[in-house]
Length: 102
Image (cartoon, rainbow, N blue to C red; front, side, top):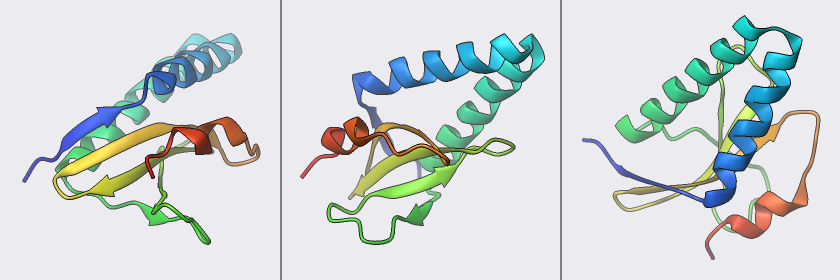
C-alpha cells in the first residue's frame, strides 16, 4: 500500500545543492544522483522502512541513496512518511535535525 509522503521545504534546497555539486563533477553524475534519489523516494512511498538511526530520539530513520554516500533522513507515522532532508555520510549538519517532527 502506498503511503503519503510529506517533504520538508528544506529537502528541495538539499536536493538542488547536491545535484549541483554532482553536476559540477560531471553532468552524468548529477543526472544519476537525481534518478537514485527518485528511486529511493519511490521505495519509501511503497513501504521501505530504511534503517533506524542509532540513538535517535524522534524515530529518525535513514535510507541510502543507491550508488552515493548520501542518505534520505525521514520519520514514519501511520500511513505517512515525513522527509526532513538529505545527509552526506561524511558530514553531520545539525540543521536537518530541527526539521524532524516531535
